[in-house]
Amino acid sequence: MLPAGSGTAADWDYRVREWPAANLLQSFAWGEVQGRAGWDIHRLEIPTTEGLLPLSAQVTGSGVPGFSRIYVPRGPVCAASDIAAFEAVALALTELGEKVRAAVLEVEVPWSADEIPPGHPWLGWAAARPRQPLATVMVDLRPQPEAILGQFREKTRYNVRLAQRRGVVINEEATLAQLIACVEATEARQRIHLPSPEHLELVAEKLGRAARILTAEVDGEVVAAILTAAFAEEATYLYGGATGRHRERMPNQFLQWRAMLRARDEGGHHYDLWGIPENDDPQHPWRGLAQFKLGFGGEQVRYAGARLRQLRPGGAAVLSVTDTVRQKVRKRGRR
Image 1 (tube, rainbow, N blue to C red):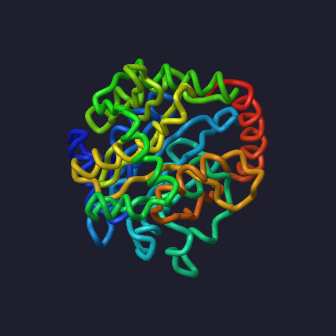
Image 2 (cartoon, rainbow, N blue to C red):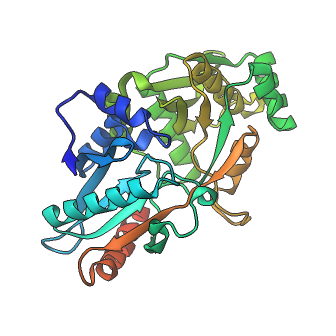
């Protein structure tokens, strides 16, 4: 295991992009976001037969005095079939665990459930609660725009064209304040907890030019806003909100469509709608959101999730208790 060199953020991101499972959560900027959120970020370069494999690992308190926990978000970025690279990663993280007195090691891989070969060593670890969405919708941006639009469900395609006819205007250079206002309006209307203004400001600051804020306007009034992030030829829809006004003009579908076109124009190959239910449970709280996202066609991807390796006796059991408490607190307050 080697600590990352003293190169720039651009150097780190360049090295991550060279690997087949490169993704936003292993980018330098996302590590900076999590660092401000209280995690201690360790960027490693791990020798493998394919070269140095960059890995961003997050370390925080475990809830047990004197011990920490390690979490790897959507890593390592090697292929699922590269078992030798994964084993090198596991060894490096175990060594890191000794240095930071980690009770457990949690790895949430970037691979879909069906691409991990049988007998992969990660499958032998204990199942853990995932921190990222287990399923998403990925829209291919490489075809021509009309072909992409043609893959939308009929109702979504109709609504995109309806919004155009009814004069919905998309601002592709919108402000953070407009996004925050729409997120807070959604939070108040639906009585749910969404990312705080401080978190949205942090994400926009750290992602810099990779972040895009777009708004939909009706007669000069901002009615919806989203924030997307670009990394490794992929744009990800991270946050959004709407005032609830002028819904009959279908601003939300049109806003996503224009975000896809913007990402395509900037070299994006895929648009990740970031999070749908992992099952067809009609009572799932994301059910309505899923129907909205599935309307854009695309491929449904189900990730393999998270697993953990216990590094110290009893560590996993104690962390299970502290995680349960943390979830209850989170439900009562802002994320």
